[in-house]
Amino acid sequence: MSLLDLASLVLAPTATKEGKVYSAIPDTGEGDMTFSRGSSATRINSEGLIEKERANFVLHSNDFSQSNWVKLGAGSGSAAIVTSGFSDPDGGSNAWRLQCDLNGGTTSNDQSLIYQGGSLTGVFAFSYYVKSNTGSSQDFAFGNGLANYENGTATTEWQRFTAFFNCPSNNNTFIGARGSLATDDTLDILIYAAQLEQGLVAQPYIETTTTAVYEGITDDVPRVDYTDSSCPALLLEPQRTNILPQSEYVNSTDWDIGAGVTITNNYAESPEGVQNATRAQFGATGVNRVFFDRAAATSDADNVWSFYIKGTDGETIDCYIDGNATGTGYYYFGKYITLDGTWQRIEFPFTLPANAGTQNYVVRRQVGNTATEALFYGFQVEASASYATSYIPTYSVSSTRVADSCSKTGISELIGQSEGTLFLEASTLENGADCRITISDNTINNRVSIEWDANADTIKGFIGVGGNVETTSYNQTNQNKIALTYDATDARMYINGVKVDTDTSVPTLSGMNRIDFSNYGAALPFVGNVYQMYVSKEKLTDDQCIALTK
Image (cartoon, rainbow, N blue to C red; front, side, top):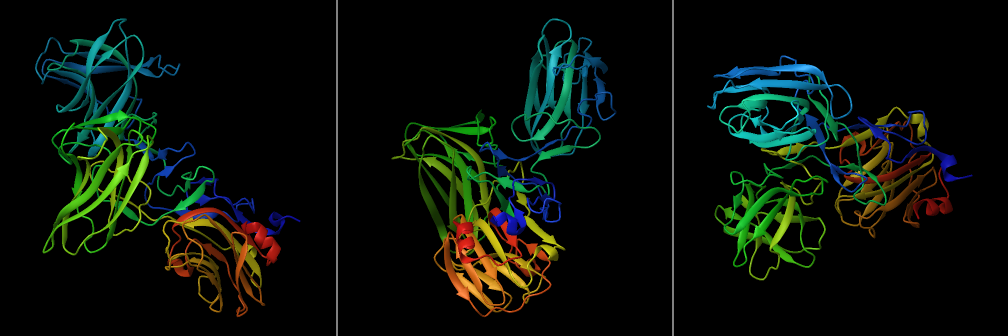
């Protein structure tokens, strides 16, 4: 008989949907875990790339007849005209003909276009497909009002055009002709699939109707993370905030670009797999610095700064944090980085003195460094934190990822009351995590708990308030395999193929009806990666547990 035949619940968290992590055993849905997180998040997907939430904020993204698409004529320009039913780039007949006429107008007020207003602020990319409808090239304008626009040329082939803008107050996205721009006086083009999304690049198109549409790692979507590509895991993290307002877009307003440094946004492919990495080119001599934003982390506390960097293998660069603390003056934290030709995530924990002011987060090439340029992506500062968590993108203001929560109630028939086994393969996000995964009735008296202690390297098991097994020999951040067995005789714990402890002071349990990725009562939530979970209503033997945990 195999161990699977003895299982009452098996969780191998690769099958998920919004609000749910499926169990392999039972396959009836009875063991499926309930999952929640009240915000979007990111993960490393199966291709090794950062996956985010994506959204198209344009309404009626391919129905330009709707009233939210305003057909404007101003000055000497005539109101734009749209007509449906034209061949589109996907082989259908869902493209639209857009006709604009400036009537010879040449001033900025002479306009003939369609636009859609909005109230979103921040960094956005506006994209859509365009083709000439006359058999010859035509110039047109598109973008976001007077200050953020692009000129495009429609040809006889479909092209996707993108305008990027950092919008401080609103998003009046437009397509058409304006007299003050290099546009044809009379415009006759085909348009298709408009999209407005946060970030620096146009992603695959998402169709919308009356509301914005979100995809990817949205609210309550569990994260099957492939950071360790050999073994995907359910990622569970605490609430964290990226206090840097611009994590991807390097500009002179939010950032301080030092003399001798040239910045190019959207220069190369990032860890996201799209072309939104920033290149910094450093001068040939002296110290070349980039102050990557200014923000106030928590005084007299641990904080962590992280970012992605890529450069020539073997070259070197510095990063540091400085600022002025009231009563303490200047403080400094530095790190020397050796590049390896691949994307590296640099994680930089630091502790600020009391009354610390605003900090500068600086990457520099100084005398002795050999890097003349480097690529950057995903700057993040997490206040009151001792370790870095997954990337939290920001586009003009700080952003918070809410904590993950996972549990299942009403499953007393899947839990052994007088005897049983709980097995987990898991790793925590820090050594000294102080977190739990528990079978219980939501009280301390009836619980079977595997605990990663606040003391580093310590893993414990508790049966009610009496049974206690533990070891101090295992780094909690390692991918440990842990089994905890119990009956009226004793409790035993096994880790990575070794029986590590036994306790004979085991209380009688009853009424256990839930599994929580936390302690009973939802305290001390588990933070880390869960690779698999196994529950049996039988107390497995020593040999079975050693085999299970090897």
